[in-house]
Image (cartoon, rainbow over all chains, first blue to last red; front, side, top):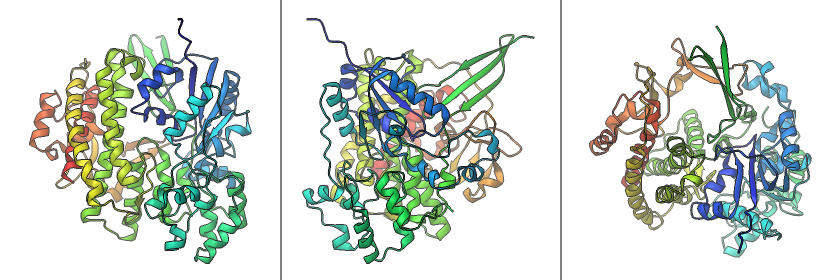
Amino acid sequence: MEARPRPVVAVWKFASCDDCQFSLLDCEDELLALAGAIDIAYFAEASSTLRSGPYDLSLVEWSVTTTEDERRIRRARADSKQLVTIGACATAGGIQSLRNFADVKEYIEAVYASPEYIRTLAASTPIAAHVPVDFELRDCPINKHQLLEVISALLAGCKPAIADESVCVACKKRGTPCVMVAHGTPCLGPVTHTGCGAICSSYGRGCYGCYGPAEAANTAALARTWQALGADRRSIHRAFRSFNAAAESFRKESEAHGDENPSR
Amino acid sequence: MATKTLRVDYLTRVEGEGALELDIAEGAVVGGRLSIFEPPRFFEALLRGRDCTEVPDITARICGICPVAYQMSAAYAVESALGIMVEGPLRALRRLLYCGEWIESHVLHMVLLHAPDFLGFPDAISMAASHGETVRRGLALKKAGNEVLRLLGRREVHPINVRVGGFYRVPSRAELAPLAATLEAAREQAVALARWVATFPFPDFKRDYEFVALRHADEYPLNEGRIGSSRGLDINVADYESAFEERHVPHSTALQSVLRGRGSYFVRPLARFNLNHDRLGPGLEAFAAGLGLEPGCRNPYRSILAHAIEVVYACEEGLRV
């Protein structure tokens, strides 16, 4: 019997920390099997063989921050049957989206001696703001088991089985005592999508929102609970303004607690 | 005289986005430019106004391969500003966490990124066809490093457990105990990996570098020490800016750091080894020499050997902790 051709996969990156794509290489037990099942045609950080498209699946790890990025993402989309964003940068703009609330010129001047050498856009935007995206895998960083699930499911023509629940639900399922109720520790768990497995509460700290907003998150109610625990306006503002600052519900809630940029 | 320019548009198997241009005249390189075109992310700017306890979580996002390095630097900087010294078992556990990252990150660099260059493969996956056992050993070793990170940091990438002043939660003795067997096995694999790396064909090439690394009074440096160099630099970390200058060049978004009045310098494991080989212990120093890594090595290709020695060290130091 003739073997079916392996699906051709590409991995793209720009403004990001590289981790989400290296999650593939972090699959120590699965890497060689995965490499046997798919044909990785373009993955610059792992291979010096770079083949041009078309690709069956593109994994995109970056937020768009330059005009060159805008051009590249359109090319990646045109070359790909399916396109998946991986991580908070590609899905919500990432930590670098804090510039969206500031004057990017002032940011450039704060970091670079010769601001005239730097070309960058005023905002860091998610991929879906530029091209259609077939699936968004969130979190900062992504969970490698979820990455394997997404790759396997999409290449098999199924919808990835990624639970749509808050971190709070993951805590309850495991029976971890609530850090907010038991210790009065402010926690973003009720409004944050799970995927990490509620790791912070198991180490006694509150969730700080890596995965980004859960579906229909009631951020206003949570902010009131934080206030009751003694959190001031600025802490609440900063809590919603981190790795997923540009995600709609987190952006709105941070603005409700002062629109001043925490970086000033 | 005609000058030709060789341009590599996209350097592969390195972290970060870069291109390289070399100007060649009459068979000799007469100029070169490393252009990092990775778009700026403005960490220095966006950290302003954040609470000092948030800094390690944010700086981790500079790099997903070595987040602990940025978390530790941030935690130590904030603690130094607050006048806090983290000592005793907490300090030891921070060393253990960092050892986990050295194992994971160094092995990623050696096996998945660097080794294919020596052996003529485009990547580790194609290298695995003829060096399967070694690639699998590398992956197992990397996994051992990640197990240390998972216990102490609660996740391998962007650990959540590093806190200004220590940790959010210290693992129990019972949780830490199984790491001993993991690190014992990892040490064996690290020794085998080092022996494999030592068989690579190293070009005979030497440059007159100035090596810069931390230097500590009585241990191989991870987090603490003074900044030293092979040409006599010996300063407090806080005096960094008096000795170093970060320059901004037109073709790169990465600032270029030079020693004031002296120019460029060499860092990372080979520099650390050259300045601190006497802190590895006599057994490991002799093992390094047996592999062809002698103190004062000025061959940059042999830096992969220094990585290998540091992986063995990280396993031994982890066991000691």
